[in-house]
Length: 110
Image (tube, rainbow, N blue to C red; front, side):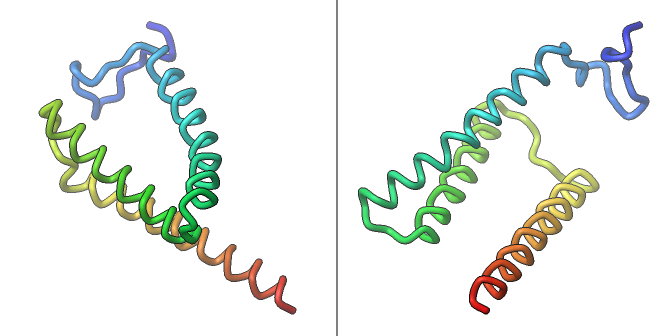
């Protein structure tokens, strides 16, 4: 068995993916991330909204799209340990970004 096709004990047979699927997700994420900043900048300039309002709108749209995707595909909602891990990871990343923003702001103001 190839190393990329190794099935971990916690994975069910239905959870196996082709190796190319991960690469596709990675490339798609990179494209969306890269174009998101440009789109937000243009939207802010055209509409006159603040950067915070544009970011809030983008986050809301992303959340709505995830909920619609889960509802349409019939995939299960995250729950239990999976949900806890995702929420913890999001909280840690958010706190780190906030700390960096505060440090940059304070250092820039001094």
